[in-house]
Image (cartoon, rainbow, N blue to C red; front, side, top):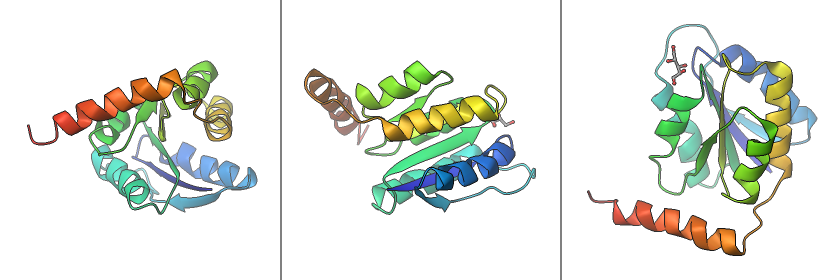
Length: 150
Ligand code: RB5
């Protein structure tokens, strides 16, 4: 499985250590930066990860900014992207099991290294349960289609 990851200046240090961690877990990583504290705009980095998933070059994505909020707002504007901004392990698990989230977002100013590792491991190792949850996720995707040209 291939994982796309990116961060803005608020999350680049955490992102760099998470790249190594994700590799240790045995996944391939597409790292889209940023790689310095120079100020950048998080939507540009959300775009890189979301387009990589849309182009089927990556299976799942991880986006890190200061809070995770800006990244998730931007990511959820991309067709087919279901981004979950989480800071606890239960929500990370449910975002896969019930929501079929394909992008995990969190804030480097919210969680530390060890919590970030748990969020990532949980997100990557859980799967969508389908069933009644599929009907609900399909309704989310219907909303996306209905709003496409508005
Ligand atoms: C950048 O200062 C900060 O606004 C950004 O990292 C993020 O937290 C936005 O949601």
